[in-house]
Length: 197
Image 1 (cartoon, rainbow, N blue to C red):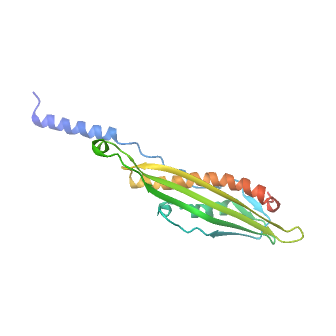
Image 2 (image 1 turned 120 degrees about the vertical axis):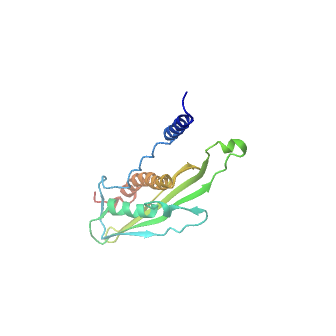
Image 3 (image 1 turned 90 degrees about the vertical axis):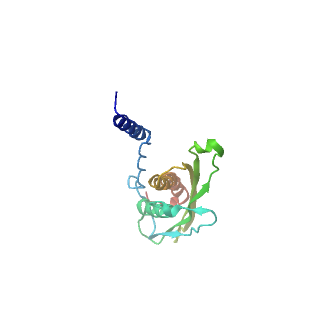
């Protein structure tokens, strides 16, 4: 007949094993925000300026908790995607919105709520960018293009700090992937006379 000490040790080992098996797998790290694999858009301009006109208003803003906040990601995009080929023209990239806003979600009440892992917060990201250009001369040109991208996701109430921070970065990355394609097409269409290649 097994001793009480052996039974107790076996019980502790079984509990430890079940705890290990029920632990969620680690969340994969989000892809970095990088545009170096895209060719630059070369513009007939002597300068490309980035202006951050975004001012947070209303709601709980958490964009500053992203490893790469949306406004910083837009500046990175401009430095990697836009090239000034020289000349009297000027190009301006204006950041109108670069927000991630937190909203609390309703939790399940009562006994059921005690056993339920609810989605606790929703994060709504939004980036709005305008690219404008002007080129003086005999065939003067002035034009602009604007793009707005959004992305939302929810997180569970038991999310770890590392996973929450990874969520912020993933929101920014997904919005920038979308913005990159939209602004590329918009610049080539609406600022066509200034695009060298």
